[in-house]
Length: 137
Image (cartoon, rainbow, N blue to C red; front, side, top):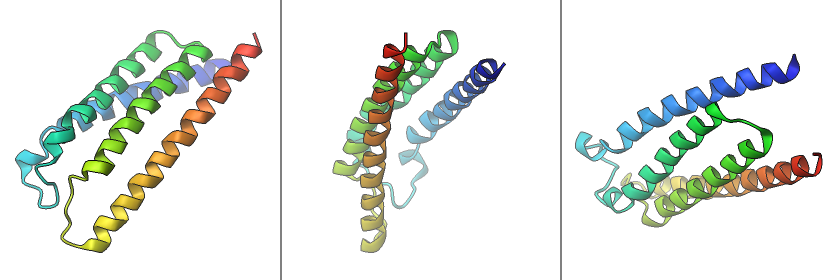
């Protein structure tokens, strides 16, 4: 019964992630059209990697809806984390924001660094679980 509840919860998480990603894909690709004052045109330079990250998240979660053994779950999460890490690094280096306030710009830079660190830690945890699960078979 417990394993069945985990699988149901995971399926709902995958569905929510897919829906959120579709909405986020629309938003990111329309930010410049909405003339938001702190989004700069340099967003165009990294939009491709952001789109790749979002689309792979949609594909990964769709795959996990259809096929979800533990090893596959952890493998997909590792792949998605690596792609997210690359996208976040590009956002950090290009920094397509200008709040016209150095404190806010600095704060967002620091936040992006923490996000990168979090993704690295999450990836290491997924690797750990992948190796532990493989040795338990």
